[in-house]
Length: 217
Image (cartoon, rainbow, N blue to C red; front, side):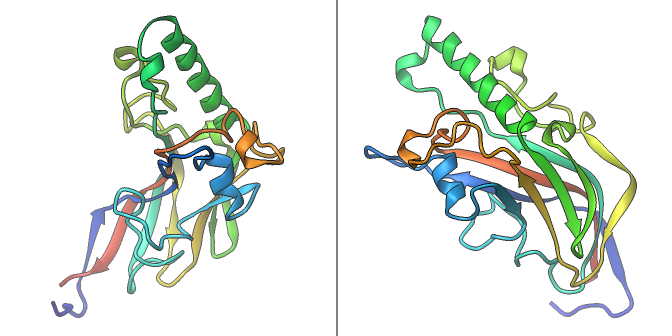
């Protein structure tokens, strides 16, 4: 469809990208630590590696840049964590309570053991421990007994006091750094525990919520 010259539209269009731990069988299934080592043992980079991802993992078309001549105003930054899969053997009773406690600890490892930064054009726009960016999404912990990073309310999250502008063709990314390493990460990926030992399917999303400006078609 042809573009209409001189006219642009502005719409609410969140950008999201995820770190994905796939489901795998065998004696050594993939886990958070082993998947992270493939990229960088201390840093997760979002909006950079978007190839071979489904729409569930990202809605970005190219690595680190907006499509065409689009511009973006980031108004909020969210970190969303998918719940761990409860094994059938711990589906009920005391074992489920212990597993729920383990999920709480793993979530704590993530949000209290990492620092999240937004970089636009190689300039750091904000940098804070990950607990500063609650998800504002997910299942209600009280109803489903599932740990969540914050309240499932889109208003219950961090919002920039002033919009962060991403200009056309300007590089941007979000980095999640583990200054002391990923909790539970061992020398051998098979021996990972805690957060590093989380197996799939598991997704960790970063969402930039805001307004996209694009040509009218």
